[in-house]
Image 1: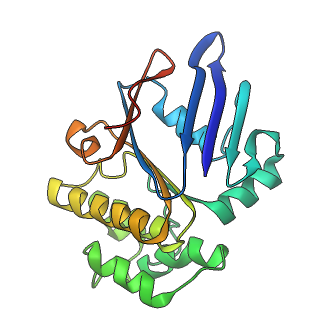
Image 2: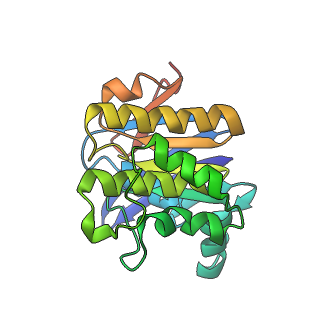
Length: 218
Protein backbone atom coordinates (compact mmCIF):
# COMPACT_ATOMS: atom_id res chain seq x y z
CA UNK A 1 0.00 0.00 0.00
CA UNK A 2 2.95 2.31 0.70
CA UNK A 3 6.63 1.77 -0.07
CA UNK A 4 9.55 4.15 0.27
CA UNK A 5 12.88 3.12 -1.20
CA UNK A 6 16.04 5.10 -0.51
CA UNK A 7 14.11 8.31 0.03
CA UNK A 8 16.26 11.38 0.63
CA UNK A 9 15.07 14.93 1.23
CA UNK A 10 17.17 18.03 1.80
CA UNK A 11 16.25 21.61 2.62
CA UNK A 12 19.14 23.62 1.32
CA UNK A 13 22.29 21.83 2.43
CA UNK A 14 20.56 20.19 5.39
CA UNK A 15 19.57 16.52 4.90
CA UNK A 16 16.30 15.76 6.68
CA UNK A 17 15.79 12.24 5.36
CA UNK A 18 18.81 10.17 4.35
CA UNK A 19 17.87 7.04 2.45
CA UNK A 20 14.65 5.98 4.19
CA UNK A 21 13.19 2.55 3.39
CA UNK A 22 9.69 1.72 4.59
CA UNK A 23 6.97 -0.71 3.50
CA UNK A 24 3.39 -0.75 4.74
CA UNK A 25 0.91 -3.33 3.48
CA UNK A 26 -2.87 -3.30 3.45
CA UNK A 27 -4.25 -3.99 6.92
CA UNK A 28 -1.06 -2.88 8.69
CA UNK A 29 -0.72 -0.05 11.20
CA UNK A 30 2.66 1.53 11.92
CA UNK A 31 3.49 4.07 14.63
CA UNK A 32 6.33 6.43 13.74
CA UNK A 33 8.11 8.25 16.57
CA UNK A 34 11.05 10.64 16.66
CA UNK A 35 12.31 13.80 18.27
CA UNK A 36 11.04 17.19 17.14
CA UNK A 37 12.74 18.07 13.87
CA UNK A 38 13.68 14.47 13.09
CA UNK A 39 11.80 14.52 9.77
CA UNK A 40 8.57 12.73 10.71
CA UNK A 41 6.33 15.36 9.12
CA UNK A 42 8.59 15.56 6.06
CA UNK A 43 8.28 11.81 5.56
CA UNK A 44 4.51 12.05 5.88
CA UNK A 45 4.30 14.92 3.38
CA UNK A 46 6.29 12.89 0.87
CA UNK A 47 4.09 9.83 1.39
CA UNK A 48 1.04 12.08 0.94
CA UNK A 49 2.28 13.32 -2.45
CA UNK A 50 2.48 16.87 -1.09
CA UNK A 51 6.18 17.10 -1.91
CA UNK A 52 8.73 15.18 -3.98
CA UNK A 53 11.91 13.51 -2.73
CA UNK A 54 15.34 14.59 -3.92
CA UNK A 55 16.27 10.94 -4.38
CA UNK A 56 14.50 7.60 -4.09
CA UNK A 57 11.15 6.13 -5.04
CA UNK A 58 7.72 6.33 -3.39
CA UNK A 59 4.95 3.96 -4.35
CA UNK A 60 1.39 4.27 -3.10
CA UNK A 61 -1.39 1.92 -4.14
CA UNK A 62 0.71 0.63 -7.03
CA UNK A 63 1.49 4.13 -8.35
CA UNK A 64 4.97 5.66 -8.47
CA UNK A 65 4.13 8.92 -6.72
CA UNK A 66 7.44 10.72 -7.17
CA UNK A 67 7.15 10.39 -10.96
CA UNK A 68 3.79 12.19 -11.15
CA UNK A 69 3.11 15.82 -11.98
CA UNK A 70 1.00 17.94 -9.63
CA UNK A 71 -2.27 16.90 -11.27
CA UNK A 72 -1.33 13.25 -10.88
CA UNK A 73 -0.36 13.71 -7.24
CA UNK A 74 -3.66 15.47 -6.58
CA UNK A 75 -5.51 12.50 -8.07
CA UNK A 76 -3.63 10.11 -5.78
CA UNK A 77 -4.55 12.24 -2.76
CA UNK A 78 -8.20 12.30 -3.82
CA UNK A 79 -8.48 8.60 -4.61
CA UNK A 80 -6.05 6.70 -2.39
CA UNK A 81 -5.15 8.78 0.67
CA UNK A 82 -6.79 10.22 3.74
CA UNK A 83 -4.78 12.81 5.64
CA UNK A 84 -4.97 14.06 9.23
CA UNK A 85 -2.51 16.85 9.96
CA UNK A 86 -1.95 19.01 13.01
CA UNK A 87 -3.37 22.14 11.36
CA UNK A 88 -6.88 20.56 10.95
CA UNK A 89 -7.36 22.19 7.49
CA UNK A 90 -11.14 22.32 7.85
CA UNK A 91 -13.06 24.31 5.25
CA UNK A 92 -14.22 27.51 7.00
CA UNK A 93 -17.32 27.96 4.84
CA UNK A 94 -18.71 24.48 5.56
CA UNK A 95 -20.41 23.25 8.76
CA UNK A 96 -19.17 20.19 10.59
CA UNK A 97 -21.44 17.72 8.78
CA UNK A 98 -20.27 18.92 5.36
CA UNK A 99 -16.62 18.99 6.44
CA UNK A 100 -16.82 15.37 7.54
CA UNK A 101 -18.41 14.34 4.24
CA UNK A 102 -16.15 16.43 2.01
CA UNK A 103 -13.37 14.00 1.07
CA UNK A 104 -15.69 11.00 0.95
CA UNK A 105 -17.77 12.82 -1.67
CA UNK A 106 -14.67 13.75 -3.67
CA UNK A 107 -13.56 10.12 -3.65
CA UNK A 108 -17.03 8.82 -4.58
CA UNK A 109 -17.34 6.88 -1.32
CA UNK A 110 -19.84 8.98 0.62
CA UNK A 111 -22.03 7.06 3.08
CA UNK A 112 -24.26 9.20 5.32
CA UNK A 113 -24.77 6.44 7.90
CA UNK A 114 -21.01 5.90 8.18
CA UNK A 115 -20.39 9.64 8.60
CA UNK A 116 -23.03 9.84 11.31
CA UNK A 117 -21.52 6.83 13.07
CA UNK A 118 -18.07 8.43 13.03
CA UNK A 119 -19.45 11.69 14.41
CA UNK A 120 -21.16 9.81 17.24
CA UNK A 121 -18.08 7.74 18.13
CA UNK A 122 -15.92 10.86 18.18
CA UNK A 123 -18.30 12.78 20.42
CA UNK A 124 -19.44 15.28 17.78
CA UNK A 125 -23.19 14.88 18.26
CA UNK A 126 -25.00 18.18 18.25
CA UNK A 127 -22.15 19.99 16.48
CA UNK A 128 -23.18 19.25 12.89
CA UNK A 129 -24.43 22.77 12.12
CA UNK A 130 -21.46 24.58 13.66
CA UNK A 131 -18.70 26.11 11.56
CA UNK A 132 -14.98 25.59 12.23
CA UNK A 133 -14.59 28.99 13.88
CA UNK A 134 -17.19 27.93 16.45
CA UNK A 135 -15.24 24.81 17.50
CA UNK A 136 -12.61 24.31 20.16
CA UNK A 137 -9.23 22.97 19.08
CA UNK A 138 -10.11 19.50 20.30
CA UNK A 139 -13.45 19.52 18.49
CA UNK A 140 -11.81 20.68 15.26
CA UNK A 141 -9.25 17.90 15.52
CA UNK A 142 -11.99 15.29 15.97
CA UNK A 143 -13.78 16.65 12.89
CA UNK A 144 -10.53 16.35 10.92
CA UNK A 145 -10.14 12.74 12.06
CA UNK A 146 -13.76 11.96 11.16
CA UNK A 147 -13.28 13.50 7.70
CA UNK A 148 -10.27 11.28 7.03
CA UNK A 149 -11.99 8.12 8.21
CA UNK A 150 -15.22 8.92 6.33
CA UNK A 151 -13.45 8.52 2.99
CA UNK A 152 -12.49 4.88 3.71
CA UNK A 153 -9.27 5.44 1.78
CA UNK A 154 -6.82 2.56 1.31
CA UNK A 155 -4.14 4.51 3.20
CA UNK A 156 -4.48 6.88 6.17
CA UNK A 157 -1.59 9.22 7.01
CA UNK A 158 -1.92 10.85 10.41
CA UNK A 159 0.50 13.44 11.83
CA UNK A 160 0.06 13.75 15.62
CA UNK A 161 -3.72 13.38 15.15
CA UNK A 162 -4.42 13.19 18.89
CA UNK A 163 -2.07 16.00 19.90
CA UNK A 164 -4.89 18.45 20.62
CA UNK A 165 -7.09 15.92 22.42
CA UNK A 166 -7.31 14.90 26.05
CA UNK A 167 -6.21 11.36 26.85
CA UNK A 168 -9.69 9.81 26.74
CA UNK A 169 -10.60 11.47 23.43
CA UNK A 170 -7.21 10.57 21.97
CA UNK A 171 -7.63 6.94 22.97
CA UNK A 172 -11.12 6.86 21.44
CA UNK A 173 -9.83 8.33 18.16
CA UNK A 174 -7.00 5.79 17.99
CA UNK A 175 -9.42 2.96 18.80
CA UNK A 176 -11.51 4.04 15.83
CA UNK A 177 -8.51 4.17 13.48
CA UNK A 178 -7.27 0.75 14.54
CA UNK A 179 -10.79 -0.68 14.20
CA UNK A 180 -10.90 0.63 10.64
CA UNK A 181 -7.58 -1.06 9.86
CA UNK A 182 -8.88 -4.38 11.16
CA UNK A 183 -12.32 -4.14 9.55
CA UNK A 184 -11.43 -2.82 6.09
CA UNK A 185 -7.77 -3.60 5.44
CA UNK A 186 -6.82 0.07 5.43
CA UNK A 187 -3.14 0.82 6.01
CA UNK A 188 -2.31 3.38 8.70
CA UNK A 189 0.88 5.41 9.21
CA UNK A 190 0.50 7.18 12.56
CA UNK A 191 3.08 9.78 13.62
CA UNK A 192 3.11 10.42 17.36
CA UNK A 193 5.39 11.70 20.11
CA UNK A 194 3.53 9.52 22.64
CA UNK A 195 5.31 6.30 23.56
CA UNK A 196 2.10 5.22 25.31
CA UNK A 197 0.10 5.41 22.07
CA UNK A 198 2.92 3.95 19.98
CA UNK A 199 3.02 0.91 22.28
CA UNK A 200 -0.45 -0.04 21.06
CA UNK A 201 0.85 -0.71 17.54
CA UNK A 202 2.17 -4.07 16.37
CA UNK A 203 4.71 -2.24 14.20
CA UNK A 204 6.77 0.70 15.39
CA UNK A 205 9.66 2.67 13.94
CA UNK A 206 11.78 5.53 15.27
CA UNK A 207 13.19 8.24 13.02
CA UNK A 208 16.60 9.62 14.01
CA UNK A 209 19.43 11.19 12.02
CA UNK A 210 17.30 10.98 8.90
CA UNK A 211 16.91 7.21 9.04
CA UNK A 212 14.40 4.73 10.42
CA UNK A 213 15.85 2.88 13.37
CA UNK A 214 15.04 -0.82 13.87
CA UNK A 215 13.04 -2.65 14.97
CA UNK A 216 9.98 -2.11 12.77
CA UNK A 217 7.92 -4.61 14.80
CA UNK A 218 6.83 -4.87 18.40
